[in-house]
Image (cartoon, rainbow, N blue to C red):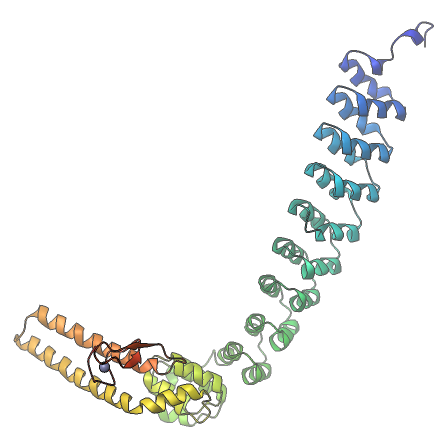
Length: 407
Ligand SMILES: [Zn+2]
């Protein structure tokens, strides 16, 4: 330093900000650098000075107080003390600064705490989650998080299928449960889920991948949920060719409950379904058939089966046996009338238009009568009033059983 230099203003205090900026290159004095980073009026000078600061408490102050976002965020770059980083994540006003702090944290248990803060912005929580790789920590997050996005992100990062199956039993979010289940390929875990999972959907889903016949049979007999039993039954019989069963007598020789149920639900011929329905013992499936089969014959067979349990439906049917006979009788006569209309049309006794109108009317009547019969298999039945006699009849009635009126 020359004799007169000491009276000169140092470069870092120079009026020209470009000279101050250049001066930083040669500066190592932390006090001066801190002074510049905190108080220089020029943003570029503050931005450059900050890079050379090592005191993390000072950096924390700058990250908290500087007016410029880039300065605040740059201050975080050099902070490694995770206690200070957590303080920034907790208190900083700028979300970008908070996110930078998260990205500098390495301790996964600290990151997990940030992920679990449900009052934090989702971006901050996601940044923290992205840095976690310990599958036990991820599992804990998947089980306890309040956010579906967080749960699904956590799940996607887990590959250990034992950990995944454990999440299924312990997460409170049913949608995520299904997401987890889809990631599982291990047959032993799938078998365990199909037998023991408390969620019906998961059990049903898992069964589709189980090959072991004994396990499928056990589920078909014992599962508490009918849809789950049905899925197992479908899986057991998926190779059975229904068109090989051509008549009712062939069904009589079958003793296997799962085959009988499969036929009762899936065979295209109603008489064959009805025969199968008369032989099965699962009362819930019998009720399902009684309520849902397209054919009234199958419905009646299901209700007649001694294993049919629903008393309300059974009483409905028994009380209506005479009405059914009457309806069958009407259907028989409407069918005769249909044949007559077709003959009249063939001989040209009536016009095509009249024939079509009359045929439509008769077919609609038959449809209405069939719907009316089906109504008695519901529990409870929805009623309406006959507009002629005021009697109570099922909503889907084409005929009044009290005044014998065609509605
Ligand atoms: Zn009436």
